[in-house]
Amino acid sequence: MTTPAAATSSFQFASPLLLGLLLVVALLAARSLLGRSSNSQRRSARPATLTYSAASLARDLPRSWRVTFRSVLTAMRLLAIALIVVALARPQIVQGQETIKGEGVDIALALDISGSMAALDFQPNNRLQAAKQVIGEFIAERPYDKIGLVVFAAEAFSQAPLTLDRNALGRSLAQVELATDLSLDDGTAIGLGMANAANMLVNSDAKSKVMILLTDGVHNAGEIDPLTAAEAAKALGVKVYTIGAAKTGQVPVPVQGMFGGTQIAYRESEIDEETLRQVADITGGRYFRAEDTRDLRAIYDAIDQLEKSQVEVQVFNQYQELAGWLMVPALLFLLLELVLGQTVFRRLP
Image (cartoon, rainbow, N blue to C red; front, top):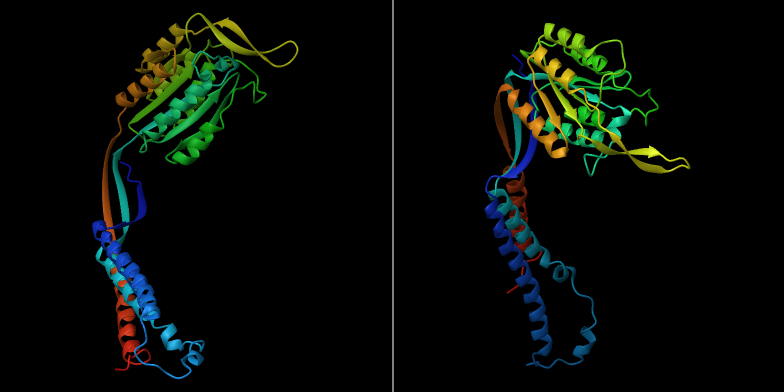
């Protein structure tokens, strides 16, 4: 039984609709600003009822700082009301703890990167690009399974060990390129690819161990025969699903031109379907044939349904209320506004 746990943290409002009251605060602020402006205009337009001698001498005198800063009281009141509104909406920090109980599936992916995977019959991508895209989607749909990646051409390499780290696995998958682009010997060592993938599962304690082998060719490299590798996988309790990824007949393949540049040549697809079918039969798996990206996606979806993880996810949330951090300054602003209004900014009768 596996019990990995993951903690998450997020911010939310328990009653977000109350934030709509902030519009009322905004209207009050606008009303206050417009009110001061209109009062000033009325005072300037109102005819004098008393006449003072040399009143013009006082017109250009500086305003008292008390008059200048009296609007601070209104700003304090509006800010306090806004803080109270936000507090009533109950801002919270949610600490989520996710506990996973049950059995996942350990999966080793074996991917052919031989030069023939550059064929352009999986438009708009070549075979390798289409496989990487679909495998990435498959990985994303299985968050509770340990998945590893093996690539093979004339040799086989462990690209990523069994892991639950989807970010690391995604980066490893993104770095996969054709053997010809990596200056590796070309070829299709299906047996070696299977052996490396099976070796990845040797120490697995999962009840269900699966290998998914994708290739577009015929075994022609390496010292290990695919059927021998299949028998070894069977002995380890590994079920192998095999996928032949290629259209039948002539397919377009980019090749280096005589005078440089890339040209398109048409070559016959070659897949040893009989061997791939035997490998699947020996280990209790299934053989699939994909002739385009849609077929490939349907195949991985089918395998996803065949190999379901038996897991139970329990989520425990803890809520940290933040309203108090807003109510305290709101009350302080109201108290300060009251004190200043009765002392420093007090209006004389």
